Amino acid sequence: MSPTFTLDGKEVPFREGQTIIQAAHAAGQWIPHLCYHPEFKPHGSCKLCTVTVNGRHMASCTTQAAAGQVVESDTEALNGERRTLLQMLFVEGNHFCPSCEKSGDCKLQATAYDLGMMTPHFDHFYPCRPVDASHPEILLDFNRCILCSLCVRASRDVDGKSVFALSGRGIGTKLVVNAASGRLADTDVAMDDKAIAVCPVGVILKKRRGFAVPIGERTYDKAPISATEE
Amino acid sequence: MSEPAKRKLRVATTSLAGCFGCHMSFLDIDEHLFELIELIEFDRSPLTDIKEVGECDLGIIEGGLCNAENVHILREFRARCRKLVAIGACAVNGGLPAQRNHLKLTEILEEVYHTSPGIAQGLIPNDPELPLPLNKVHPLHEVVKIDWFIPGCPPSGEAIWKALTDIVAGRDPQLGFGLLRYD
Ligand code: SF4
Ligand code: SF4
Ligand code: FES
Image (cartoon, rainbow over all chains, first blue to last red; front, side, top):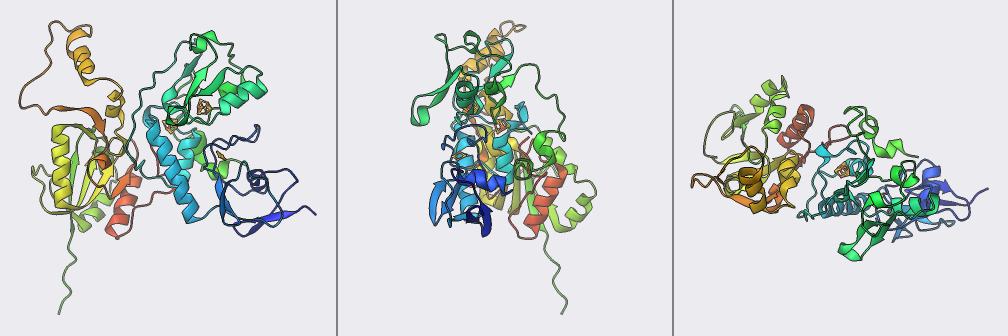
């Protein structure tokens, strides 16, 4: 019999080496997350997946499951903290959903819906982040980057290229591409790279594909993200 | 002794730096308007054409703040309305008008009135009647306290109806799946 921990009072079985979020999702219990992706090594940066383990706050994507842990996730307190994290992500970038090609398919937006975020609450930074439209097929709209590093990990670990990297520290952190010119067109990025498909928000976009799916038929029009993902 | 008739909520509405889309969507509550009018009465609003906002229970504001007049009206609403609702993307996060925020106002005016093609010897409008534009567009909550938010561009008629019925019943408005939208 596999060992178990409890998540919001329910027994969750796990295999040795699994993280709390992996075991929870395998058992059909949803924990909100943004920088976690089942196909990549965890990054532990967005903190949306924070749960309490025996009363202590831990990122469930970087914490290994252990027998007997008492894990809480879907509580008003933790969901309130998650809403605050989301609000900070919204005001740090420029998120104008009505004019974003990713709207309806965006994990940041869908997670904010799921957690009932009615307002970004904080003062907006309105940062100036020019787009990179140099590549003939791919647009980079940095205004929406949440620095989740999924494209960095996908390019490095799956595509074997390192087209993308996070540079700088703290609030100065930004996404850069691997070319002396700083332009995507001068990298070895390719349309079928995993890195192009993995962005959870509307930064890495294939050109001339925007708004192809009508409102009402997009991924998260049909069901909330907590019911859509494994 | 007969029960006193329940007083109707007095409601003011306005559109600041918005497109009137939220007001149009408000009219999309269709036949609910008949139920609503049993519960509320309008003060200043594009629907009544009253120019000055009076003492109100609720102020519903569409659009963000792009000029000095917007700020003045918002402050009047805050002073006279017990509760304020920001309705729509522009009121909530600045929306489309705020997409000018990374550009300098002088450069925008130059381009629109001087250098863009098709304009010969254009002048930047300077009539003293015109409200001065703000350097940046701001959502409402950055200037006054906003009690409730109804996001959406515009929020659907159903979302507006749900939020209004919550408010009239004395609850904080909650929009569940399908009603809570930012686009
Ligand atoms: S990336 Fe997502 S949250 Fe940001 S503007 Fe686009 S749809 Fe909205
Ligand atoms: S571009 Fe997308 S995938 Fe890459 S770090 Fe930014 S949000 Fe994450
Ligand atoms: S999903 Fe765990 S920290 Fe981002």
